[in-house]
Image (tube, rainbow, N blue to C red; front, side):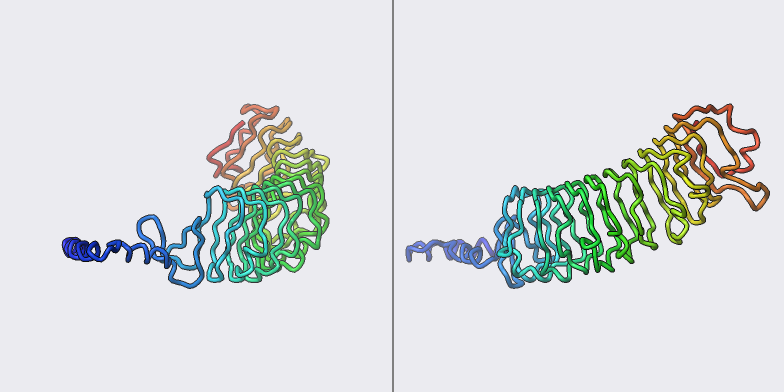
Length: 344
C-alpha cells in the first residue's frame, strides 16, 4: 500500500509543478475542513472542535481540554456530553461558551480558578466536579439531575437548604476541606444520598436531618465534641463512619451510640475518649488510637460470649493511649476470636 501511495505522489508531483500548483494542496484542504492527521483530529459529528481541545472520532460525544493552560472557556459544541476541562486556570464559564452545551452529562472543572457559577441550562448533567477552585458558596440553581457532586477544597463557609433543594437524585456529595461552620437542615432533601464527606471543615456539631440511606459518612477533622441522641439508630444501610480528629469525649457520646447492627468500620481516633465505647458485635474495624483510654473494657465488645455470640472485630487499634498489652484480659481471645490485628 505504501508503495502505491509513493508511486501516485511521484506521478502527481511533476504534473502539479508544471502547472505552478502546490502538489500537497489537497492535504491542506483536508486539514482546513476538520480532517487531521497524526496528533491532530477529525470532527465528523457536527460542530467544530476548538483547536485547543481534542475530539477523538472514536468517542464523538467527548471533548478533552484538560491541562492546556486555558484561562477562558472554549465554545462547547452541542454534541458534547462528556467535557474534560480540569487542570487549567479558567476563572469563569460565560454563557457565550456554554450556550449550546445543553447535552452535557459529565462536566469536569476541577483544579481551576472558578469563583461563582450558575448551571441553569444543564438540565441533564449527572456528574459535576468543581473541587480545587475558589468557590465561596455552592453555585445557585444546580441541576436537579445531578448524581455526583464534588465541590471539596474550596472556600465554602455555609450551606443552606436552598442550595441543595430538589436534588433527589444526588447519591455522592464531596464537600470536604472547605470552611463550613453551619449546614442547618440542608441535607434533609437529599433522599438518595449514600456517600457524604464533610470532613476537614469547621463544624462543631453533626448536621441535622442526615439522609437515611447513607452508606458512608465522613466527619473527621472538624471540632465536634458531642453527638446527638440516636445518632446512628435510624440508618439501616450505614456501614462506614469516620470521626477521627475531632473533640469527642465520653460525656459527649450517649450510651450505645455505636452499638448499631450493620456498622462495618468506625474511626474515632485522635479524640479525647477515656473509655472504649460499646460497639456492635457486627463491627469489623475499630480505630481508637491517640485517645486517652485508660482501661481495656472487654464488655465494650461482648456482653455474652459463647459458641454463637462473639465479636466479628478483625482490626482493633488502641495504640497511643494510656494502656499496654498487659491490660488486655486473658479471656479476650474468646470474645475477639476473629481479631487478626490488635495494636496497643
